[in-house]
Length: 322
Ligand code: GDP
Image (tube, rainbow, N blue to C red; front, side):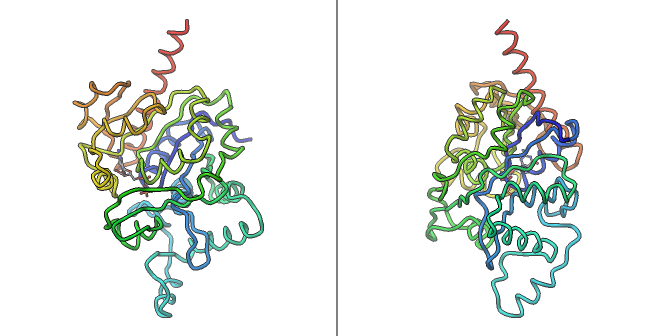
């Protein structure tokens, strides 16, 4: 039997998966649950594609292309070559093995199966020991209001390589979404000890999760410490458009902005040593470490730091209750 989850991580794709892997490696087997953004999901060539869920699946299943951080290492591209030859849309790369997942997911969703259930089965087949939980079983789409008009996430992120200036974001379908029973079971369990917000993009990856009605309240009601790991190192994103979007939305790319973005939700923040000077000004407990996760050891170190801060907060709460 799978053990109860002691830690719930909220994650987007590549950046989030780095920490999720670290958490999986430092926790006893089976004790991690990952709540994954589905705002990036889209329908392309008639197929339902869930990039963040699949990045977690491939990362925790040990088949990810480690150089890229997404897609599979053992991949071929015969489908893409032929699609290109036939003049089809080739801006979104689909490997031959990867494609099987999208075809199967599309078929099973059309037959009325829930995304949570089929992702759990995929995870089992890939030998993933952690629980992979989509943020919602109903579709939610991250839409960006940009200078180039309103764009679906993948068109902004992959086709246009994050170039258009972003004015605002919205999450279509969020009002109809609900936290799943599987997630609520994790949050209601006495075994749960911490919720960790991975250093995923707060606007594009974590906000869609928090936009699900009842999600923030359910996370808070778990009563465990909620810790975020900052995606910024020295005011810059390690990868991707986090700092660019902050600048375009008129927000300073700083630890203070991350703290205030998650205000009312998080109890503590893990920052990079490069940002240590900001720690004192933040109205919450902070732990500093090197947060750049290049190696497996880095992933484990950052995971251990986030758990250490959560444990310290639990202890101080227990002391103040005594
Ligand atoms: P995406 O959905 O694939 O774009 O990935 P995420 O949203 O999960 O992660 C993107 C964020 O992860 C970016 O803001 C990066 O700055 C952050 N990130 C990526 N690698 C690292 C790292 O090694 N350390 C830290 N602290 N942040 C990282």
